[in-house]
Amino acid sequence: MGALLRSALLLALLAPAPAAGDAFLNGGFEDGLTGWQVRNPSGTFRVEATNAEKAGGRASAHAVKTGGMAADALAGAVSTPPAGGRLTISARVKGKDLANAWLKFLVFDGSGNPLVPDCDLRMLRGTFDWTTVERTFEIPEEAARAEVVLLLYLSGEAWLDDVRVFPPETRPRKPLDRRTAKWLDDHAAKVATLAFDGPHDDLAPLARAIGDARIVQLGEQSHGDGATFLAKARIARFLHEKLGFGVLAFESGLFECDRANEMLRAGRPKEAMHASVFPIWRVEETLPLFEHMAKAAGGDRPLLLAGFDLRGSGKLAADFPGRLVSFLGPPGTVEASDLAALSRLNALLEADPYLPPEEERAAGLAALDRLEALLAAGRDRLVATQGEAETAFFERCLGNFRRREAFEKAKTDPSFGRWGASNLRDARMAENLAWLAEVRHPGKKIIVWAATMHQARALDEISIGGNAKFYDGCEGMGEAVAARFGRAVFTIGFLAHHGTAGTFAPRFRLEEPREDSFEDVFYRYGAPYLFLDLERAGPLDGPGYASPMSYDRGIRARWPKVLDAFFYVEEMSATRYVGE
Image 1 (cartoon, rainbow, N blue to C red):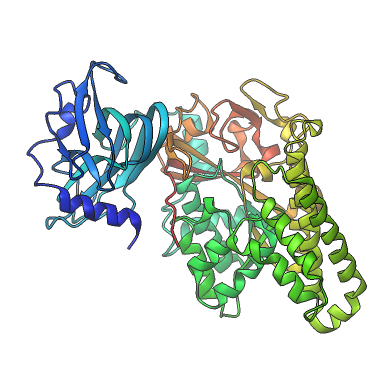
Image 2 (cartoon, rainbow, N blue to C red):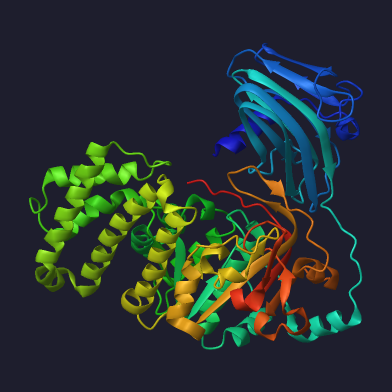
């Protein structure tokens, strides 16, 4: 049982029957603690309404805990949650010396059993000023009651204010002019759903736009775009099942993604996900895709996992030195001191910032030199015993290791300039993707999963906040990939009109898009999901505002030069991490 669910069960046991009515009539604590309950099993917890500190209005709740492991809580009841519907919970919170605290939304059935394991609005630790916390929850059909709970373990102080519970925002839609609406009728394809399973006839327009492209790149604004991940996972399944794509390449470590195929073939998709990709993609929205790959792994048309990043990303990254030694030959072929030095450097590379002791860095690089020389000297023997593909794979991984060390070092070296370290990484990612296409998986069609920033071309066409030189000096992976593969690459950027984003970082609401931006026009058109082939962008062609590169609403470009298509999601949702 997960820690979150254990906490919910503990609170359920501590909680008396909820008071009648909606506690959030007093979400600003203007009427003291009316409608709220204080639960003090530790005997060290006290709560008062105070006007000495508040986020807004005249008061807030001030909670103080001086010690004890018991779960003390300030809870406000939502007596009639919309079963089968959705609720957005919003609050302002401030902390001082909090050792371990949480703001949670708990939903119970009629017997008092908790229904939503992923119930956190925010973990609260340390000292911080007033912060807005907001998240939208799906309410199960069995829901009978719910609570917003400020939960404190150990010690610390917290202030709570402006607690609101409301249906997800509905925004007015300004009518579109007839010409634009007609153009969208003719050119934009309405997508029916983001659900992973089921038919995908509604994605047929993507197939027509992609045509004979061998590499399809699926971007994302940032790394907390839950709805975008749902859309990308569904598109990846469509590309695999309907268009014959056979490789899914993540912006994650080349070594660990390749080796995680062993786990997929063994029917262990969740383990493969944690072993391979960065934590930002170990989420509920991508897990069905890993399950799909595991099911397909034993058939004659697998969807193979690959990575093209020089950085380590998954749990298997730590295995690289040992597996390299096993590949190079029998025990004694590699000096134990070299394995130790390389393993130590591998661990040091995970620090951010990377500031290794110079003696350990030098020892690790010297060991890398000797291992590369050992592989080169014994290459014919290795090809004869291990095969050309495996030999080339470890050569590539060794090269990645050296390039990664240079990249991490450059991040703390101001002489590289603003984009210097980023350029080193993007150049190697472009080389790795080309190697996947031409050497590791020749002839296979490849889906590329990464941030749009890495996939976009013609960065000099983009202006951010009125700064047309924002990307001056930036040499992105997308430009190199486009130069190498030309029309064989098709790149899709993803947009959202409103909603919440984030995974580990604080979740946040997207800003309102600019009037007549792509997001605004799509929203006014009224379809929740749209696909637009930018090559046919007609009246929407030319400089225009859109936010496929980040959540910044001030991004403007001639988008057909930068991307090939937009996929629009009306409401963004934050991702939900999947524990091991």
